[in-house]
Length: 186
Image (cartoon, rainbow, N blue to C red; front, side):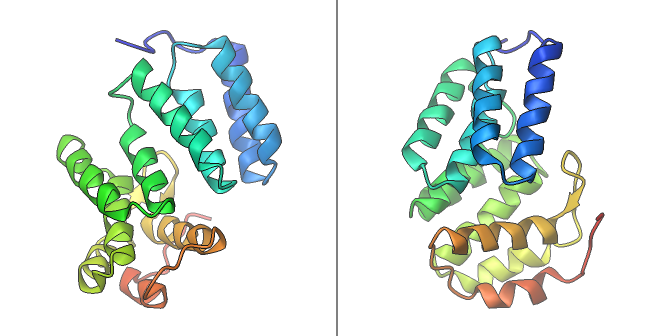
């Protein structure tokens, strides 16, 4: 299976450094770390997906898509890859494609919080307000196991980032009440 080899200590250090720098908003340094990790671990999708997520934040959508497509060629079943792609579709005005991709991904990966979040976001961007709010109502108290954050926190962060990127997010003001809470591990 692609990417079965585990990262060596230097790659793990680079991946950790990239994620830390992303949290600090040091995006150029994070990109450099993930690029170095990808060069040292060229058969793996993970560094490409991590870098692609930062490129979305920087509105460098074509580069993010190139990273995700390269990751898909390396490991089509990489966990989270379809969620990353759906997020890119949301940011680039392709909400209907994000919705279709996320629905299919959820069938293959039942219970995946990020797919559920992308489905809710796609509904909101498509103007399906009732469906979106119904989806959001089921997300607020769910904990993402890897991120150790609640759905409410992830959804609100996503909406903030989308709006900062210039997306028009209709009815976003209704979302916090639908999410309930607050829930937080921080």
